[in-house]
Every structure is written in C-alpha cells, then in structure tokens.
Image (cartoon, rainbow over all chains, first blue to last red; front, side):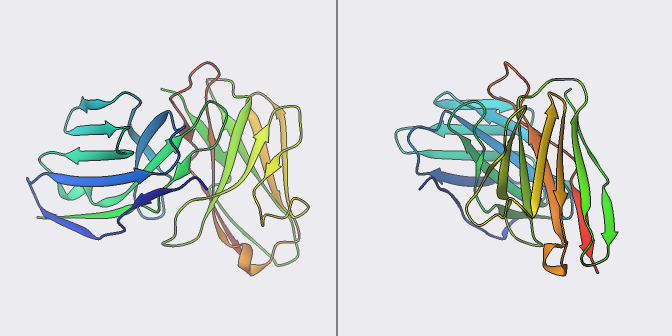
Length: 111
Length: 116
C-alpha cells in the first residue's frame, strides 16, 4: 500500500526561525514530490515540487529529496506568522495517477 | 498560472436532494481530474479519478451510484452527490493536471457542502 507519512505536529517555531517539515514515503516508484500549504477551510496551494535528489530552493522555501532514504523535507527560512498552516506532503507515481497525500503537519509560527 | 475553478464554493441542501459541483480548468486541458473529500481536521481523501470520455474510477468504499462523476470535456468534470445526507457534509476538492505537464497538479478552491 502506498503511504506518505508525516508527523501531525503541531510544530511550533518562533518568528524568524527555520521550520523543518519532514515526510517519508513507501512507494519506491514515486517520481515526484509536492509540498502544499493548506490554511484552515481552504484548498491546498502548491508551494513547490521536487523530483531530483538534492535540494531545490525557491525564495524562503527549500525542498530536499533523498530517494535512497525515501525522505522528503521542506525548510522554511525566516518563518513568519503567516506561514502558520498545515503542510501536506504528496507523492506522485506517474502522470494521470492521483497524488498520495500525507496527513499533514500543522505548523505554528509564534510572533 | 493555471487555474482550476470550482462552483459552487458553498452550498446548503436539504437531506435527500442532489447537488452538483463543477470543476473547470480555465486555461488548460486535462484528460484526468481527481475528486477529494476532506472532513474537518482530517486529511484529503481521494474519492475518484475522473477520466474524460470514460467512466470514473472510484476508490474503495466510495459509492459510485451516490457520487456521480461526469467528465464530458477536457476542461470540465462534475461531481453530483445524489440523495445527500448530513454525513455527506464535507469539503470537496478537485484537482487537475495540465496535459503534457507531468509535475504540476492544480487544485480547485474547494466546495463546502452542508446537508441539513
């Protein structure tokens, strides 16, 4: 069974700190990995995706992928209170297949 | 960027009636769209995969006769909740992947359904 695991949190970090969100996946056939942010009562919004081993940076966000360890992470630098949300990790096996979502990690950035 | 639009964003209906939710890709075509359901404080649960021009594929435990999916064109999929009951009250979200873009999936804004 394809699974994506995340710590549900809450993860609390002070404003300005680095928030580190982690995710593991079970399906070695997964090709691409996505991080979504979801505010309460809203639809998920894509933050970034990664499909190659290593780091991918976009502004304050860095996604890290280690396929050997089946591990994906998201780092948020200079965390802001507006970053407080649930962060969903998702894995995709191939095109036109559904994303497999983790249950999400709730992040709270404290001013 | 690509946009997926859902309508309505909120709907209240009486128990026993049917409700239709539309999911449109506004500036791209998608042969496949996905329907998810999310109960409060729970994770997204895939309900079904909507395939343009063919029958939808339902996840285990999802009643295909209750949740009717029609993907009549490359830009529109509809989810109809038939004979709705209060336990069907949930947040329904669709997603779509643009043709030829294997690494990007866009979500609609979601539709809140309340059955009273």
